Image (cartoon, rainbow, N blue to C red):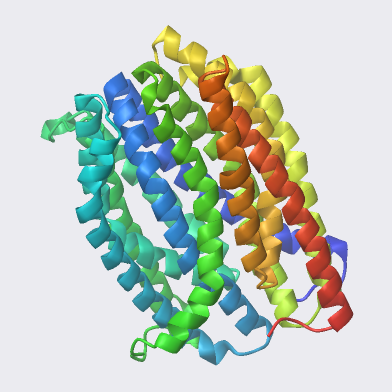
Length: 454
């Protein structure tokens, strides 16, 4: 990355960072999309089982990945302040931390999976598919979390095209494995929805291996000397990363978990409603990759400028990113309005399921607008290493206000399942307003101080 002098140069650098991240995030979401879509094509029970499994897995995966992504602002600040020689040790400590987190998740999963699924009182076939899906995907936890650290380092260096390349390799591999393992093609076992979990686990191992080859062999990373020296685990380094990463991880967890909580609460509805809800959430999550990509880009760019003490440049990047996200949210809202029926038809051939998906997608329009403000704003705050208030805001907006409101509307009014979506919309809107207010205060503080974060 380079320092920039005017808006035109900033726009160019912003797009160079953003575009590969956007392609990467879309490809990652397409992996989940094809898991859900292909499971739905196999059967409604498989779609519901994968929906339940995904609802349990995604908050854990994204929340813990968020903790490990704390390496991004750390590396960005080191680069901005000219301390490249410290990057290798920070990345190695991130890998050690990812291994520790992986072991803890596997241990917790082995103890809690059965009690959680039994508590949900699912239909027997749906529970069986969800259990097998989660056990299968658990076999890929170690490489997935390791890859998260490597990708965060790659992106922090501005080499987002490499992450894009790796993910674009992963997408056809995952889809091909789904064909083989969900439908049992070419002599492979026919596993149904559980096959999507096996395919994902195998894909995680492949992308981790490719990323490791890049950071150890590519000339771009040569001067950093990654993995050339052994760095023993350091509790001090763990504390530094956890201080930044834990609030980031919890913020992500609270946002993703509230959607999963709604899916789990909706288990009292019939299988068709669960399947339609999950299909609509899946497509909304695909559109969410736009503001999320802008968020990740802003963390890198604002962190770099803040590390160098260029506060005016950091503010210009934040305004450029947030305004771009809002503009794109209006485009995605138009897509949902005009093409809702075609989108629903991608997930199912059952007319009842398609009709319900269409209804849920109308509510998803309002998600896009709130996310376009809240998500990039969090990216800017992470660039300033201001992460604790965002964590509190997300918890209050989503869990104290949004989810209880949704529950009341769903259980005590005639809105039924739609009540949960209204609650989510309210929580997201409140969160967006509070996060934007926090950003204004942070920018004023840094402008007054005239220097970057420590």
